[in-house]
Length: 498
Figure (cartoon, rainbow, N blue to C red):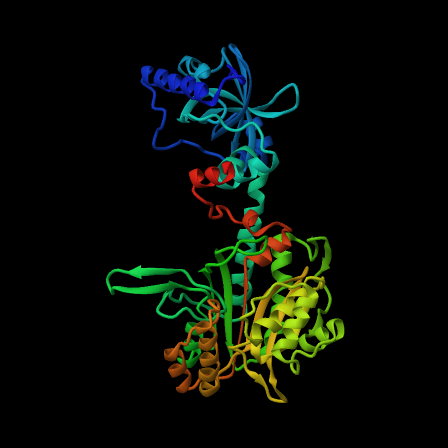
């Protein structure tokens, strides 16, 4: 029987609890430990002709997402991960024990149905139920629909309900899985070794970011959750004789939320000995095209209003020359005050205590938002790249590149700095920035400098995060995570009601 849609959720829960009690009165398990399913619904569809001809009994299992009719004839839409199949329950076919529970079933329940496969007069492939078994009684009613800004908070907090009521919402995460599988397969095919490096560190290194801090009870020390995908560890592997490594994993940055930024997300980084940034950027362009094709089946995308075509050769953009062309400022020669004046003119956000590297980067970010790409940004000033090798023909610039798509950075690579004296000096400069209040400046990792003193071969490194996937899907970063971090529900509702 259909539920009373005018009833409150509390009343509907009471009705369902009563049905659960009735199932117990029939000596039926409402939550058995297993199912005897023999086929997924998609397999039934694939073998449709043979199953109809043979008359073999099959057993499917899944969630009821719709039901029609009652009494002597009922129709149930059963959904599993692979799709939907209709079950037809007729009083003269189904066993009495199964007919007895039909009025105790609700939309949202997981059930198992056994019977022969046939096509109804309406032309729908169905199972003519011989037996029906409850696998999990749903106590709370599923939502009818999702809409509006208010529901967005609920939808992300209770993402499982979106997946349960809208099976097409799951398709995004099959694509996400293919995205990372393609990344891994591409690198393995190119001879890279997958590694795992520490997620807890004494010194958070490899990026300009504010780390999360936690306490290690056994050592009685504070440690940091990593802010890069083992950059300084993978470079140690280069010191140790490994030549091609990569890691895919979670990293954490205690920073602000935006359409593009999360605090807990997946990142990939690779390191390649005896190669420089030019070798690396060729590999990366090939890799992006491969990943996009494997995960999305196309190289053409619409992202944030930009039309993006990944095919063809990607344009190279000169960092300092492009800024000078558009904003009439030479970031290599301008004083810090001149950089601040330009930022005020551009109405860009910056901190009055920001040092030179931050000021230059803030100017570039104003310009970056207008670039559709795909493009490769090169010739960065050394002030914005504390881990990259200086260019031999111009030590004020570094051998670094970034991938630009739809006005945002979609990957970052270097010819890695392997001069321990230069590295120590840059760490010392970053330490001064931290002392001045820049919580994102890099920490001085003396143990890493010591490793470099033993000698690291010429190495190129590169990394991208799941932001690339969310951009290709043209979604905010939170939408492209299965379960994004949310405030506790009580705290969130109190904030809304203030």
